[in-house]
Length: 124
Image 1 (tube, rainbow, N blue to C red):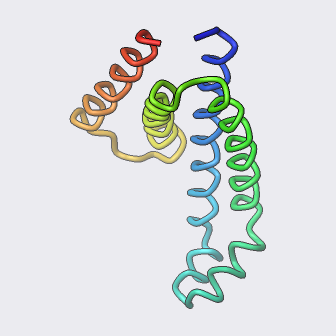
Image 2 (tube, rainbow, N blue to C red):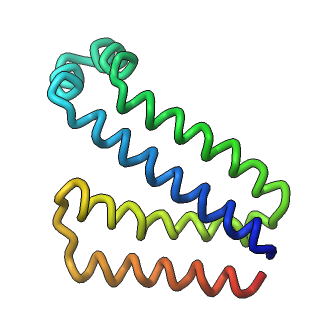
């Protein structure tokens, strides 16, 4: 696997994690939380007017477009395990940006997933 492809895989999973962060921030805004309590129609309207949800969807769309290019260059069985790297990124986002509780067991599980990604990457 070339460094370009590896870099694009890592960029793609990082963008996906960033999209998830934006979506999480969007749904935690008070107006979105209220819309979600009111029902599906209000939830959809709330999502359509939420800047964070739009940013998340745009970043996610860019990530998907890049992922398509990656899949055209690398076997799926090699590329897809790298999605596990996003677990590390999202855990870091949760801890540092969202003040989420990250337990030692969660850290261990996430490190095991990332270790598997490294092993798969080395096999390519």
